Picture 1 (cartoon, rainbow, N blue to C red):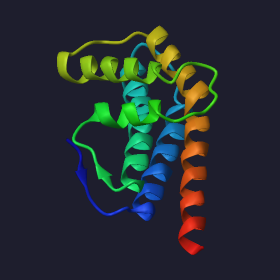
Picture 2 (spheres, one colour):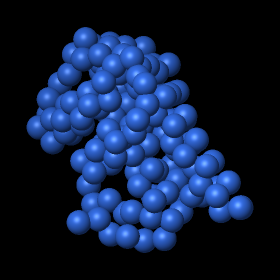
Picture 3 (cartoon, helix red, strand yellow):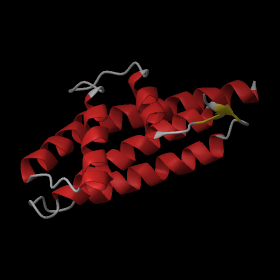
Length: 139
């Protein structure tokens, strides 16, 4: 069960900014078999941070990554690839981190494709939600 805490829009914006910077940096990296594990982990982490930012903005402290990724799947936004593919990145990153799986350049290329297709639309929608909340608070 999630722990409810106070809504923290400022922290949510900070997390989103960090996710955006991490994604921008990662997408500039040269993709090779050797860099694949870092690229995949960083792309996944950027998506996870977006989910966390949305939960934090609602006052929810998640207990694991699954909840953060599931939160992204609830966002109604048009993307070029299905948002549910982010969960496949979570599983791949888990195998890399905990089982020593060595991903290929092709898997990194696929992660980059998911990032290009889904990250910016999700980021923009979460920002828009936070702006709407800020406007409601003022009114």
